Amino acid sequence: MRLLCVATALAVTAAAVAVAEPGGAGSPLTPALRAMGEGRFQDALDILNRLVAGGYRPPELFDLRAQIDLAMGDDDDAERDWRRAASLDPVAGGPRLALGRLYTRRALWPEAIGAYREVLLYQPRNVEAILGLVNALQRNGRSVSARNLLETAAATVGDTRIQQRWAQVAAELGRPEEAERALSQVASRLEGLPKRDVLKRLAGLYTKGGRTTEAYYVLEEALRIEASTGGVTAGTYDLAMQPTDRLAQQALSAVGRALQVLDEGTTPREEVLADAQTARAQLAELGRFVGEVDPPRERRVAHAARAYAYSLANEAAVNALSYVDLGLSDRREAFVTARDAARNQMSRLAKATSDGD
Image (cartoon, rainbow, N blue to C red; front, top):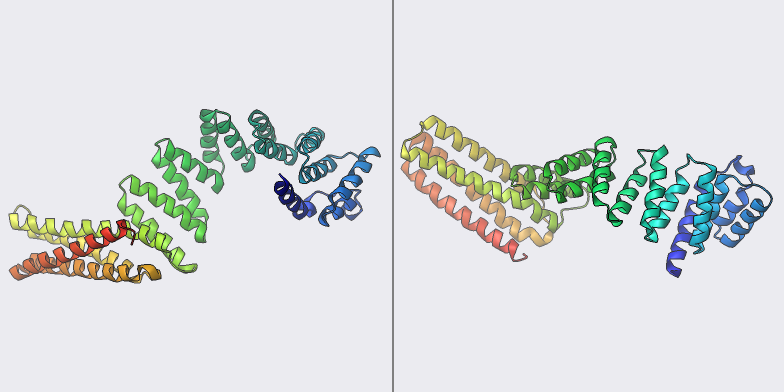
């Protein structure tokens, strides 16, 4: 408790200058604010008590005194003063938000629910009140009400915190499309590492839903963001390479199926050639992406092996195109050799990753 009070006191000191000062520098609250800024909380409390005794009782005074009460470890007096401030200014959200935080810290969920709801009566888009009420409802066993509130807020309030919270809940409810939409909206509003983190969460949803291509593209962006902000980490590298390798294997298999169809004579050569060209173009794109990655030190050996595997896959695709276009039988055999070598190399990479390389 002592450590909590000290931390609270420091926070109050830092926030003292942000407290409203009616009348500017000549406000009766100025000496108390100065004392708070200097860490003299008892002096500040004495000043405020004298003002109250003298009949000076604006809501800002009680809000300020509540902050000092809390910093000095007196929750009951803090509650009393914030209630007084709220009663003097029914529209002000600050005292009620403070009460909501106080009740949450004390696990007084019905009281926290009431405080946050009072804020939302006058400020229906107040993000802290919405998230505080969602949390209090959940902790009070009212999960359905919490979900309904969060869903409504996600549809009407364009705040990243609400969207991220709703994405988590929607995923838990088995509504991945809504979770994906929420995370996409969040990512579009962010930059740098916060955006990277959201993209990684979005990729997880795509992967879980079997949407490998979408996972690849968002992780490609996440990797580029990370590379531009200090270097790629092993965790992000491994995550990004999973859909990349999976797509490469799928493209390589598509080339093999095209050749099989051609050999069976069931499809015109032009159609087979178009399918093989599409798969080869995808392999080339994936290979370029891998070639542009600057891997972390602990993944350099694996990355060199991966680059070699992709070169083998591309070689196999080129041989396949030569076989389809020109009918050269030796290119058919060369395709199989390069394809098998690429697959073996990728299998070793997958096993190394699963073993904790």
